[in-house]
Length: 282
Image (cartoon, rainbow, N blue to C red; front, side):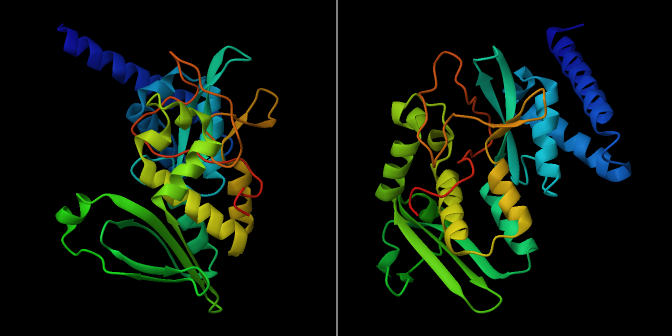
């Protein structure tokens, strides 16, 4: 058998083994098609980010179940939430953290039935005509040529929502303000070593930061939304207790992430954020 054939066989064996493990662990919690979809999405997430395979399998299942409890999918394609490898130096092991994605915030907001509209968008060079922070009114001219627009640098970020009762709120942060926020609350990003999510996908991190700031300060917080924020960037230990990780958070100062094995191992997926609590911008 060729080396390529052996590698493919090994990958298939690992997938089967992981699927069987996950299926066993959740058999008493999930049933039927819902369990099958959960197992498939977890295996898919691990395949998308092979570094996740370094983590204790129990932590992978635990972090995925935190998202499943919110009826969110760990599928990397959907981007509701992510299971991110974390170096637990105190216990000399790798474990998976639950990290909510900005699309997860949007899903939970829509599902609450309280939001008529919600959006977040990057503003590119030449598009911003003005922003009035008192009236919370933004004036922009969006370049309709998608390819040309994608080549322009991002100068800021805008997020807004409108509740069903008519209440509206919006916020605009310049690229410089978002950069300052990231440098202050992510020491891993400040170290500029290339492995933080801020460096891998700054825009998606910015979307999440702005949505979290907007919803947690002025929005309607459903029970699911409150639970999601409390669970974000958490780890479930052997005793079933929830612990907050300390890597690359955006709302609390952190310790630098060491090399050569960073505490947050980036895959192809976006986004970590803060543990529960009020935003420093509040």
